[in-house]
Figure 1 (tube, rainbow, N blue to C red):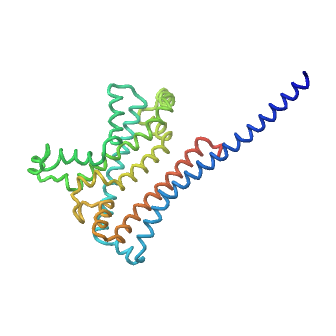
Figure 2: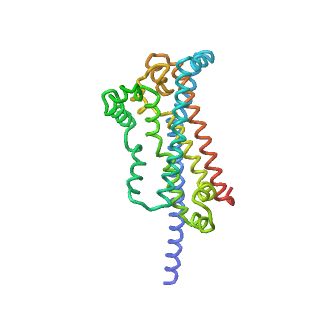
Figure 3: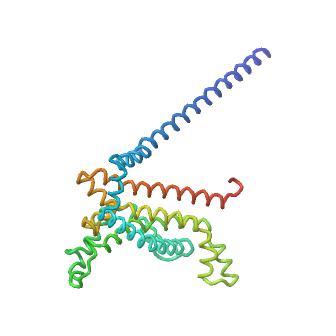
Length: 297
């Protein structure tokens, strides 16, 4: 009887070792499959298209490449893209700070509505956003007659492009700050006010330093979207060469005209913008993690 129990225990031990072996092997196989699939997807759909953009841009030589970049229409598109971003990003910065501070630190009526409105550009197609501005400010729109009487141009002009860019980019800063401010709570601000600090001093010396990395992260994403926006800007711009074409619109026009080298040359600038944005984003994430968890870096 005792010998049977010993034999049974040995069989269980050997079976357990057998199961552990195959379980470990299965986990290794699954891990390798998942990693291989992820890397393959990254190379095929991200790295390869980026390489193709630069290869096509320089296919006809560096002379053609730089000639496309210094073309008058290309320079105008670059200036307009930078102008739209230079206006939209600071305004979104101010809005994002104000909205996130109000939502995270105070209770008020309409708070849930404000959160919904902040998320609205994420759910509305950029083309629809552009059509809304045409409906409101176009020649046949709600304010079209009044604007024409006062010789004010919004649609098919720079103001319309700036408005469209503002609409599609304003959630980015707020959505980066709101979760962080809510997680931090109000204890530090209340302590500062108790010690005699004013509301503005509390904001500059307590709130802002605590969210600076998230703020920079949101600004970078906002700027990248502002420079790369196509749908909403395409609707309100009118595609006027040298006046209302941004860089993405200029790329489309060149491509449709079969000027492939010039199109890919301008597109390469947008690709470089994406790479620089990714590098800055990674640096900010590293600095933020180093500040929050210094013992792990």
